[in-house]
Amino acid sequence: MMGAVRPSSGGLALCAAAAAGVLAYAWWATGRSPFTTAATVAVVGAGLVAMIVGWTRPPRAEAPSVRADAKRWIVALAALAGWQLLAYAQHPRSEHPTLSSLTNAALESHTSRALAFTAWLVLAARLARR
Amino acid sequence: MSREITLGGYVVLVAVLVLQEVSARRAMQEHVARRQLTFAELVAVVRRSPLRLPVLAGWLWLGWHLFARVSWR
Figure 1 (cartoon, rainbow over the protein chains, first blue to last red):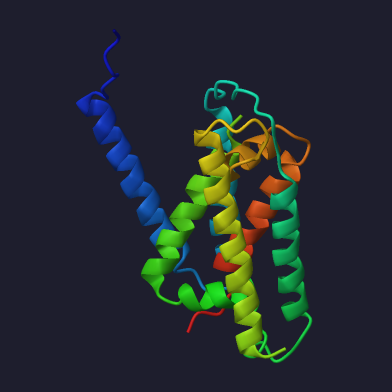
Figure 2: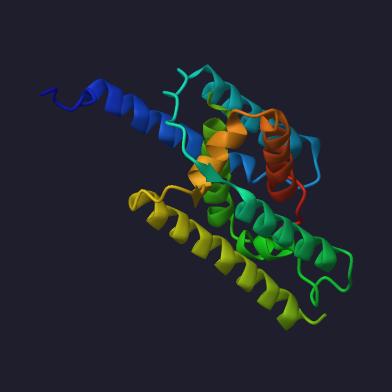
């Protein structure tokens, strides 16, 4: 039986340093003044770098094929998008909140914004992985 | 449509998505012959499809919208 591969202490230190670096960057990037070029470059640039990092990682093993379909997901996600559009088309926003206006309220503190930005970067890398 | 109705609609739709995931995972564990995809399988399918690039572009737009285009108080 093969033993589990254990990361070396050097590998762990590298991972910890990378995680700390990403968190520090997220804190800095989410502190930029909104609606500025600096904020756009800090966010979109980091997202592109995360996607490139994900893209250049070795491809995942091919998932086993399953006899399953996505119809219910498509219907439910389309319904959510439709509901959001219906709210977006109406005013005032306080009476007709959109998903992003609700999210904005949750992201008011710098800490929650930095953590959410970090999660967004991680998911960007995962989405881009082949 | 009032705020309560709007919020209620979101809660119902998110609950439907969560229940669907739970149901798909249960069917997967029970090896049901025909079942719905789990959310992770759905994402994997999209990643290998022509929708991949539009989804990545949409993800970039979402980050820009949430983190660079909002006035923080």
